[in-house]
Structure formats: C-alpha cells, structure tokens
Amino acid sequence: MGSGNSTQQTKWWQVVLVIFLFAGMAVGTFYLVKWLVLIFSGLQKEVAAAIVAAVGTVLVSVISVIVGKYFERKRSIEQELREKKIPMYNGFVEFLFKVLMADKIGKKMSEKDMTMYFIKFTQELLVWGSDEVVSLWSNYRRYFVDRDKIDTSFNNMFELEKLLLAIRKDTGHKNKGLNKGDVLGLFINDIHKYIS
Image: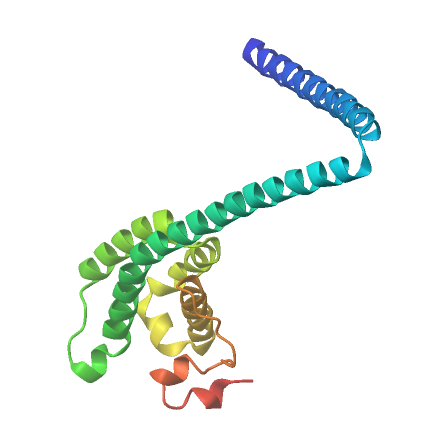
C-alpha cells in the first residue's frame, strides 16, 4: 500500500514539474518575442528585412537537415526490419505449403515438427512481426494446430488469407486489386465456389 502511495506521489510531482516547465517556456518565449520586437522596431526597414531573411534561411536549412535525417533514419530502420521479416515470412509460407500440399506430395509433417515450427515462428514473430500480423496469427493459430480444421473448413482458410495479406502488407506490398480468394486461389483451384 505504501509503495502505491509513493508511486502516486511521484506522478503528482512529475505533473507539477511538467506544468512549471511549460509555464517557464511560455514566459521565456513571450519575453524573447517582446525583446525581438523592440530590437526590430528600432532598426531601419532594410536591415530588419535582411536579418529576417538570414534567420529564415538558417531556420529552413536546419529544419530541412533535421527532417531529412529523421526520414533517412526511419527508412534505415524499416529496411533493417524488412531484412529480418522476409526470411521469417518465407519460412512460414514454405511451411504452409508443406502442410497444405502434404497429400499431393505424399509427405506429411509429424506433429512434433509442426509444433517445433510453431514455437520458432511465434518467437520470431513476437520480435519482428507487425502488430496486425501478430494479432491475426494469435487468432488463427488456434485453428492451425488442428490439421483437420485446416483441410476442411473454408472459413478458416479465409482467415488464413487475411493473415497472408497482412504478411504481404508487412513486407511492403499494397495489396491493391486483390479480392477475397485471390491469394487462396494460388493453391486452391476451386476457391471461387466458396466465396459468398
């Protein structure tokens, strides 16, 4: 109970400190603007215009550099994430095809192999996957564990398609022009019969 009160008291002081900091910044800005107005009002128009132009040029340059660095860093992070995600998602699609095409290729995966892959993929997804893919995988994996449900339930297949579309989106695809069943149609010939 004592530690809860201590945490609340700390938060209260933090809020007060932030309010004082903002108030101080507002007062400081007001006096800075007032001082600048006094300086500029005493200068000749040509000198004031030259100073404003110089300050404007410097500010635009600084802002351009800061914004450029921000977007460059953002692109770099996205590229690094994509490099981690693509092998993980390729492995998932490869695993999915092995499971779904097991009867056709005559090579069924054992329950142990499937479980080991689920564990590995979930660990990687937790670190590298987007929020949307993590959420869809969490919902879908309950069905995935039961092989019979995957093979017979087309509702579950359409949930799988949502997951695959989210994976494509997470790797940079727009998914424009893709309709329900288009992705499933890549490996299920008669999927159009089950689209309502």
